[in-house]
Image 1 (cartoon, one colour):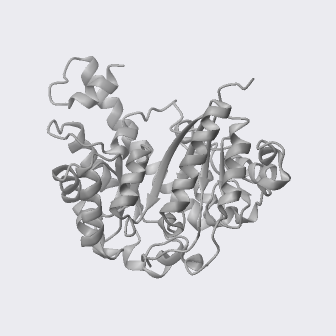
Image 2 (image 1 turned 60 degrees about the horizontal axis):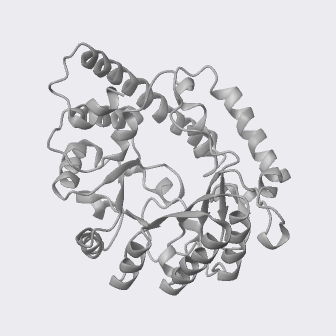
Length: 370
């Protein structure tokens, strides 16, 4: 008998990609020709199904569409067998640049209730990426077919001063989206003109957040700001991913997170495991946790937003690379963001409690009246 437990699994069919985005964190691996064998995916899914009831799968890369539509048809079919055999539920996110999403591919993902998450930067997409018109048509097709769609929009030093215009573009097109600040790693290290000043980025973000709080006409999900609504001084923003997340990489081995630096923490091959939780007791997993906990003790415990961040920002940055400057950059973004958003939220909460809430949107009122 299993306890009801959740696990998040990233499946990376390949590190190869058909784009050369200027900010890619995985750029050195884009020409790799290694593809994950479908049999290894089956073995992994069965291992996890024996232990967990709630399985959240993210297809990532590289570019996951390069594996082809039949790869995913086989996975979805096998999951249905496991669902009956082990009484499990599967949830899916498909993170893609969208270029190879044919109508049949889109129909398959929609039929399996997959969240299709496309990397697309709205009105400034040409700054970092290519094939803007083609990708926009794919987005429109998914939307017209009522697919579950999310856009990841990267902001840079060239776009940040037009953040409100970007927000209005997504609003007018009724596209759910989330903001991601460019990170100075990978290809972006050679694109200095795009790298953000943390203070300028946060100032722009706060300005649009204040606008969004009172935007009663908005009907889209703006995930960044919806997450901001939950930020409180003594409440953890997110749980650390320890012991609840794994990645199956193209080489057929498990890793902790599925980002460039955790390739140094191989957790073994599914064919060598009797129980998926052996990954979490693997000496490399324990080593990674020890490194991160030590860094949190050294860098985070005296931080003014530690009670909110709980070290998650440092942990998330570390799996991209053990670079002190990069870790500090990520932490500075988090400190400035959390500190100022919490101040805004405290003001909103007070006004609502004082019944001065007429200017706020229904979404905001609903969150603060909980």
